[in-house]
Image (cartoon, rainbow over all chains, first blue to last red):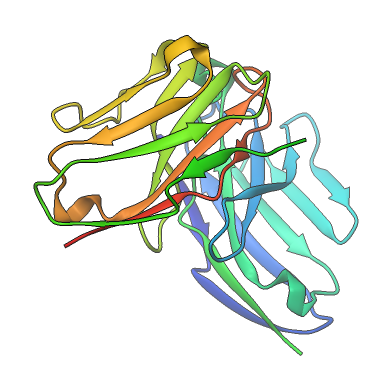
Length: 113
Length: 113
């Protein structure tokens, strides 16, 4: 019940295309859903996050869509650029978790020029 | 603002040897986390500190792993003795408080031969 399942494992997108990464969770106590971006040799960095009181959050080219009833959330990267090539992790946490993040398995995104 | 500092960046040891990692969190951050990231997987929380007290160490293999955060600032994570399966990147993160945005360091890549 603590798992967060992420798909796909890898994704290749053409420059200018839309990248979509999906995550699903089981624990209904989760109330914070961040996405992290990780470049090789670096630690993960927070990209965008959402709480279940909204169904969508947009920041620039990055959008999180959240479906509470399906217990799913996704990251959309519009107008994907080669600089977006990185590994993306979804995560989840709850107030009763003390800030502990449960991470998905990661998606390696490659944006081709 | 300086980020989370970690050292060393890389370490190669033989199995059954011991190793220690060091983390200096962002100044003023009361909460400190150690994560283990095995190649191709998302980070997994090993231990969480609030100031110098342990909040969660449920996933720390206590027969071989230990961590401390003296004076509530820097932290060290030790493995003794190391096993082959301990090969991973060890990430340190900090946040102002539990549930706050977590900022990650660059990690220490450990290879156990």
